[in-house]
Image 1 (cartoon, helix red, strand yellow):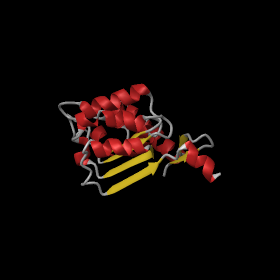
Image 2 (cartoon, helix red, strand yellow; image 1 turned 30 degrees about the horizontal axis):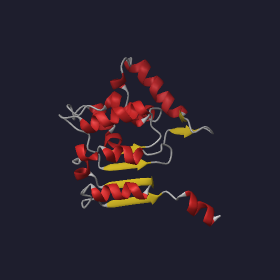
Image 3 (cartoon, one colour; image 1 turned 90 degrees about the vertical axis):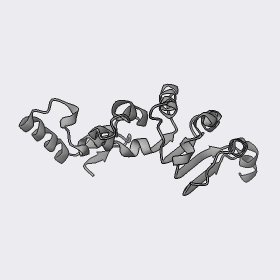
Image 4 (cartoon, helix red, strand yellow; image 1 turned 60 degrees about the horizontal axis):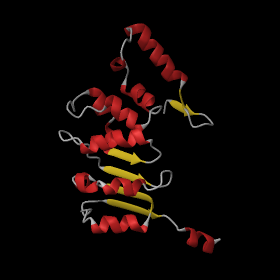
Length: 179
């Protein structure tokens, strides 16, 4: 890779990549984002949240758009975890879009950092049941038994999944018994 990570988890471009970028700017007079190579664009994406990347570069009405193709992994693998409410609302709007709804191949839902995120997402799943038709991978992290019951009662078809990972949240009673 052409970047390194500091102690705070921030990415830094390598000197080689910076030299390439400087050379490109001097040689070709880079004046817009599209002038950057795919490699540099992906490094820039590492500084953004997944919802920011989708907001900036996701163009489902123009799937041949270069930026849309570069961020392929960001719209085929969605991780709902550690996101703000505004990001959640934006991603939900993509799922609910009537013209070109976002249909990822991999979905990760986690209650680890945001309580009830799985429940909140599944509450609206009846409106976007088609999202499950494209899913090949589903991960539920810190899932409650109630979440699993909701999936069962909702008759969500998960038969096409190739990978299912469920991590059940341990209740406080079980935690105290294991210590």
